[in-house]
Image 1 (cartoon, rainbow, N blue to C red):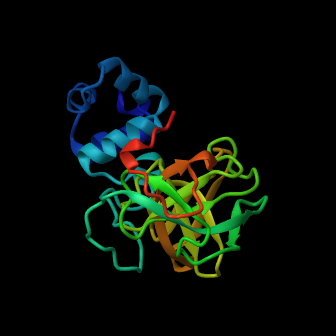
Image 2: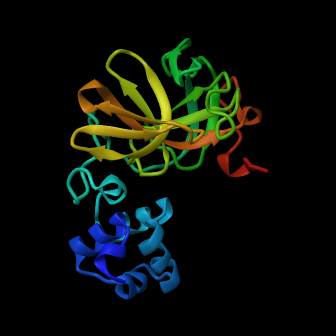
Length: 231
C-alpha cells in the first residue's frame, strides 16, 4: 500500500514510530488484517488507545493529528495524594440536578456522609460519590445512580471523568485528551463532542465506579465490602 492510500491516523503513527503494519501488529499482539483495515479506514478508538499506551503517544494526536505526539500530563491544580487505593464506603458528596445540557450543580452536603454512602472496592481515600438525577447521561448512567469520583486516580482516555469548571459548573463526560491546552470530551451518550480551554478548567477527576441505587445506604455500614455482590 502506498503512502497516499494510508489513512492519516495510520500515516502519522508510522511516520512517528518508524513501524510498518506488520511490526505494529506484532507489537500490539493483534491480527495483521486488523491493522490493514486501520490503514484503509482509520484506526479505531480501541486501537488508538492501545497504540497510545504501548508507544506513549498522545491519544488525541493519534485521532486528530493536533498537538504534540508525546503524551501530555493530565491537568489538575490540586495536589494528588499518593496514598494506596484501598476501597471502602464512599460518602455521597451531593445530590445533583442534571440539566438538559449535561451540566449539573450541587444541591446537598459537602462529602461528610450526610447523603449516605456507596461501596467501592478500589477508590482512594479522597473519593466521593455524586447522585445523578435526570436523563442527560442515559443509558450509560441512569437516573438515580451514583457516580464515584476519585481524585487519587489517573484519568484515562475513553473513560468517564468529572470535569469541574472554574465558573462552578460540573459535568461528567468521556475523556478524549488534551491538545494544545484544549480539553477534548465526548458526551456520555456519545452524541456530542465538547472542548474547553484549560484556563476554564478547575480539575479533571476520574470516575471509577457507577453504583446502582440498591447499593446506597444512609448510615455508615458495618457489613464488610467483600460481602457486597454486584449481581
